Figure 1 (cartoon, rainbow, N blue to C red):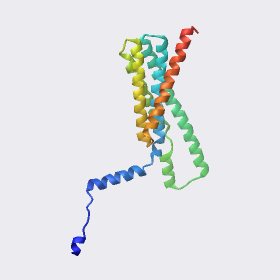
Figure 2: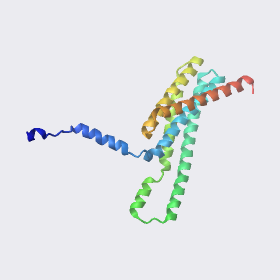
Figure 3: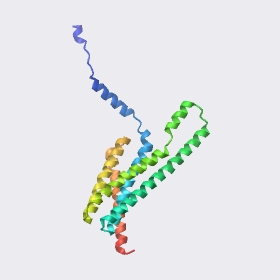
Figure 4: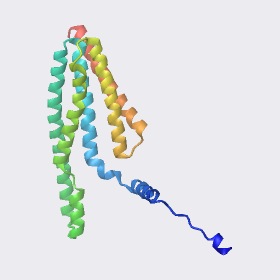
Length: 211
């Protein structure tokens, strides 16, 4: 009878692995991704919104598809260079400040120095991530407008493609950063649509008024 009361429950190997994965995800520090994630998210959204807004502004007064595409391409090149240079200078300034602060603290422990080097910002990494992300974002409205001749349809397709891309970028950023998905997607989408609407409206107003 005693043997009948003694029993054990075996845990399948895949269940234990899933528990370990859940624990590792809960303990993961998403702040380590902050530097490159900020540069990439800023670059992608800026490329998408600024180039799309530029093209919408041109489309408000010009119906020629070639004019919209050329203006968008110019915005892509100029914006990618600007983002890369801006990120490099900004992060390099941050690096100089942190290095100067560490020298003032006179830390001499080798282990601490190695950890400090790993945590220092990387200007080149931020510049490359920002430029690439800007280019990826800017390609979306360019491709959306390149193959459509009808002016009104072209504007609508650009808005639709950009809106979809904004939601995707917001979702990717929330997954990588461990933030709420709905809030992140809505914030990015609302800001992008507002930027395009304001640019289109003001450019249309100036174009019709003859200023």
